[in-house]
Image (spheres, rainbow, N blue to C red):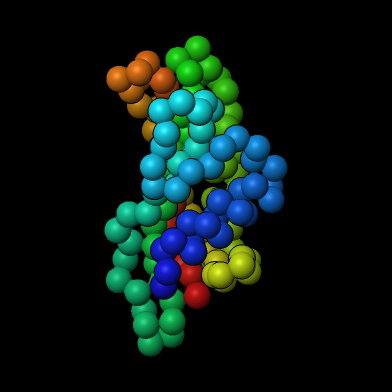
Length: 126
């Protein structure tokens, strides 16, 4: 499974659902707010006999310290699109199913004073 293509598929899916904020892959720049970043992290062992992969995805939303409600609303919107996504063909991957591993995790302010919210998802992909 090509994780870069998976992340791009998820980014394009969120854009197709109307997410207009900047979405980055694996690295969040310092200057653009609000911003979303998609990170891959260790998933489960793939079932290569039936060609099913089980990647995990972390979504980070970063907003200015005065935009707490905006950050909460944005992460909730993303969660609504990714939680329970199933039987969906994206450009490079077929999503069998997805589920939220953790709900919204509000983080302390980062060193620049920005608010961050995280949510984690597990997927089954063919």
